[in-house]
Every structure is written in structure tokens, then in C-alpha cells.
Image (cartoon, rainbow, N blue to C red; front, top):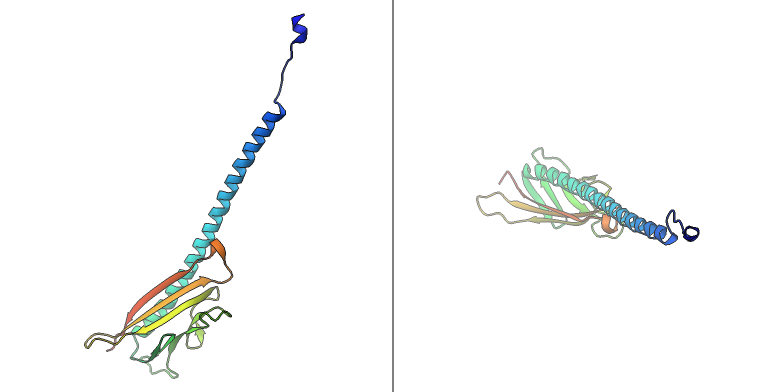
Length: 170
């Protein structure tokens, strides 16, 4: 008779199933957030690399041309005009265009052409021509700061680059 009242239990209760599902949901949310954070950081790294490469290219072109210049004709905070070894007319120049204008993205111009890509916004640009010490080549300091165009939030990066250029002829 005792065997008639025995309850045989197979499977899982509803509460046990809900607990397991809840644990899997929490684990899934944590993993998803980790993946999204990794993807955002990767995009930020790519953005940083693109901007840094662009600024380094512009600085290397400016360094090569200014270093070989015969003389500096004019130097302002936003541009430099120099005389090259070929006496090119009009005189070659580098200038900062649309910096912090709030409109079009800023860029570095070499004469009338663009040195930096359209994918970045030059937000800071400064040329400093230092009075030379007698017997030493005149130095020129160039400071550039840029951000990517159309990227904001955690994926955005602001990159600064600077270079001191010494003229070869003095």
C-alpha cells in the first residue's frame, strides 16, 4: 500500500528552468557588451592610425620641402611661404585652411592642393618661425591636431603631431 502513494519525479521544475534561462541571459548580455566594447575600441584604433598616418605624411612633405628651401619669404601662425631651389613662381607655400571654422573640415594645403585626406578635420594648426641663432640653421616648429570626420563618441580620436624643421641653407 505504501507504494501506491509514491510520487515519481522526472524532469525539472518550472523554477529551475527559469533560473537556468536567467543565468544564460545574464551571461549573454555580459558577452555582448564585451564584444561591442571591443569593436568600438578597434574602430577608435583604426581612426587614430588613419589620422596619425595622414598627419605624418603631411609633416614629412612639409619637412622635405622646407628643409630644402633657399629661404623663408613669410611665416605666419597659419602658413609659410618659401623660396625653393628652382625659384618656382608663385612661391610655394603651406597653409592651414578652414581651421575651427565650424563649417567644412580643416586641412593642410600645399599651394592650392590638399595634403591631408578628406576623412580628417584639422582642428589645430600652427607654424612658428624662430629667429635663428647666428651660425645655426633657422628652425620652424609645426604643430597639427586633427580628428576624424563623421565619427563621434568613443570611436573618435584626437591626434596631435609636431615637428621641428631646420632649414638646410642659412
